[in-house]
Length: 253
Ligand code: 13P
Image (cartoon, rainbow, N blue to C red; front, top):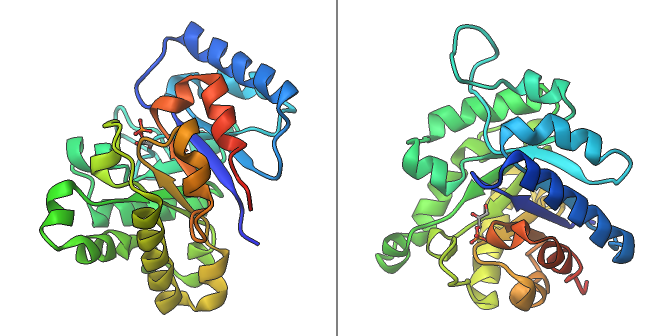
């Protein structure tokens, strides 16, 4: 059985006070809506991680970072290393989010290095892939996804087994346009098939693949019912405690 996961990517939102209030609101929601068998991960800005860690003590909610340096440590001004994240109790980290691919020119080479840094420091990468609308309409969908998967599929098997994948079609992020459950299932099945080609059926069936892109309480259940969708990576709706917990309670399988 693979893990069911709902992760909230807060992106570059919220002041310190707002971040703590949202954390508290999520705790209140959890006290009245116990989650069934779902792993919850909050992914705020770096600067709130340590403070949130203490607020989340004993809640079972995990913390993730939005990015990590490709270097171990040293003279890299402005960077945050995997060992720094580990040292404050962070367990997950997004990698290759389309916003970082677009605005920070993340490429496969750098992402490969970051995957190694995270896994060597015992953090779980949430490795994001997804096509733009032009790529989908231009008929290159599968080639693009295959190429984006490369840094993950090039890992050794025991490293690959540590990662979570997230399919986030760029055209669905923050646009209100959600992939239909048919489109999501089709891509998730394709991604799982690629994992199977690389590492076999056993590893493929154990890999959690999350969907992201305008996922909200009104569509989460339909998406999470898909055979190969193991949860969600939530942007906008994760900034409202009630919506986020409602999404986390949308699994029917
Ligand atoms: P939205 O849910 O706001 O579309 O964002 C999705 C996302 O990018 C999560 O990483």
